[in-house]
Length: 90
Image (cartoon, rainbow, N blue to C red):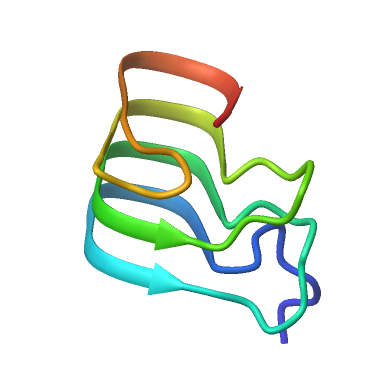
């Protein structure tokens, strides 16, 4: 319906105030897309989020994101980006 999405797990676009807590996502076959892509997102919090990761692929890609927080995740454990970022990969 949407074609190939830029993330294999979560693609969040035009969102304000998103929270994910105690989420685990894995793939059966390695996927070189990022696990999570946030685009035009404000106020995002991820707690205890565990994501599979392919070698050489970023876990999170942030595009036009303000106020991003990640606590106790895997493979990225902690991140806090209160300012606006045009593009960042974690």
